[in-house]
Length: 466
Image (cartoon, rainbow, N blue to C red; front, side, top):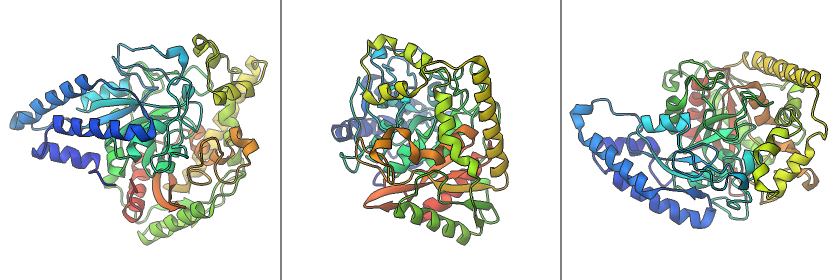
């Protein structure tokens, strides 16, 4: 990491070492320079960014008049293009919304602004956030910040590419099946999927609350340090009286968690594909690091039913046979990315009956209950994020046959905690062939503070390479 962390920038702003305008101009320059390599920026209103920076400077200059400034005052933040920002295009990666400009901020963006942050830009994603590679028919492909031949992952791949290129201090993405955690893992970053119901989905497109995904999709923070991610997570949570899934549960302070004495389980993966040597080494090394920190660390055998997570996640995604997705992109006139077309074609031709839908709900609820009961036996569980580091564009992750590219067999470990609705953190833990490797730290419901505290111990030994 060559740039200061987000919280270091905030401290410098408060100390008067630089102005918010200077910081905004700094990141506008870095962002556009990096974008020539990674192709991640979709929309930016430079005049609005600088005007908001000037307003932040006026508030910072008030000094004693404002003894308790907002926690992110003057800090630029980038936002995934599935999250609505008033006045900036929000395409969701679909030609059907090529010209859509929302007039209101999503709840999470409004909370960013209330916290004093500046919305720097919108970033690229796959069509409808429905792929683990960032490419679409509107904006094209985003490349990995270390190797343009490789993917930064998806669906929050544009965020990961800019953060990984040190061209954004902090980012806001979304995570359904792993769309924050996987790009963070690929790009050497920290990414948090909050507990289902922690963060309102109001103003995120496409909406999923009335779909088979229910509360599985959530917004969450991405950054270069655990502390930065924790600070953003504390800002965006809580009910908004619109998203009925969002609940008023206080956000715990990870700085108050003592890792020594925590019960931590770990394993090498739940999916049908073995992990790479570098991934295995990273998980094993993290287990030793946590034991050295005083945690009670135990290698565990994941329950066999955890292997059902990927099948359940995609059953939920296509619970209506893909009817909602087709309706949402009908205005595209058939102009879709091939991966999205393949996803739609993978859904059953006949929409499920009501009885079949209720049966799927029962399976998801039972799976969620099983995972939560299992995780409740620990304070945190450490797993791989994926089977290996970032693959080349159009290629599957480590260990997956190219013919199975679109079956997502390498992502079962993120799907487990997505379907369960539990908080899960991706944190850098090593490298393989010069590419970052992360590990996933999952925790019981509403205990993001546990995952973040464990992540801080890992980070102290394996700091972000970005």
